[in-house]
Amino acid sequence: QVQLVESGGGLVQPGGSLRLSCAASGSIFSINTMGWYRQAPGKERELVATITSGGSINYVDSVKGRFTISRDNAKNSVYLQMNSLKPEDTAVYYCNAGIEIRRYSNLVVWGQGTLVTVSS
Image (cartoon, rainbow, N blue to C red; front, side, top):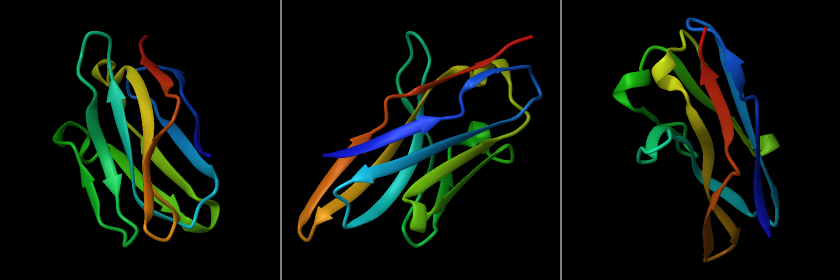
């Protein structure tokens, strides 16, 4: 009923930049916290960044100063600007959102994932 669609992944050289986008669609009453996670092969999925409906932001230490999360409530979207990319940033990036589909009814929804490869 509710879907998150991600875009913006691809191949980039070390030191380069990418901007990931994620748009929610479907039956949406409101969106609470939105975030980005990433997972490399053989690794646990890890939190990258979150942003609440009130604008409070948290980042994993490894991306602080390089990544910026933002959201556009009118577009039901969340973004991740990634600068100064390193090979260790290579992973599948997943969008995540806590969505209220109607009063008293909430879902946690995941995007399909978009691959980011940082390599020369």
